[in-house]
Amino acid sequence: MTTAAPTAVPASKPWALWTGRVLSGLVVLALVASASMKLRQPPEVVEGFAKSGFPASVLLPIGIAELLSALLYAVPRTAVLGAILVTGYLGGATVTHVRQGDSFLIPVLLGVIAWGGLFLRDARVRALLPLRGPN
Image (tube, rainbow, N blue to C red; front, top):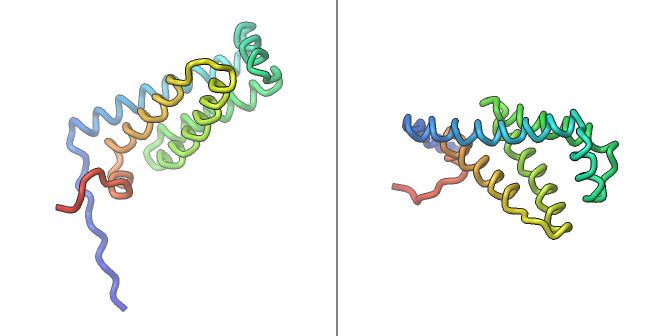
């Protein structure tokens, strides 16, 4: 039995790598800022969660999950796992906004930007999700 040699995925071009890093950094900053609000629990955040039907007791675990997802996404070695967790987290945020009748554009765009940034900075993701056919 023969095995085919893995096809090499070229490294990111410098502009793509830096664009990916900037996009990913923006996602991480947004998630860390959001998580810090949940961890600090100012009255307006507690009221917003109550309006969404969530008790204040869930703020801490949700904030921790959001922060851990962002940190895993920021570290290159765990970025794919982090992106999956960020996507799940943002999916929950999207559903909450839809249920309330609010705009859900921000969590959806943040998810798209997260995967776009990862695609630009990580050759493994480009190998799994080729956007153009073989040459």
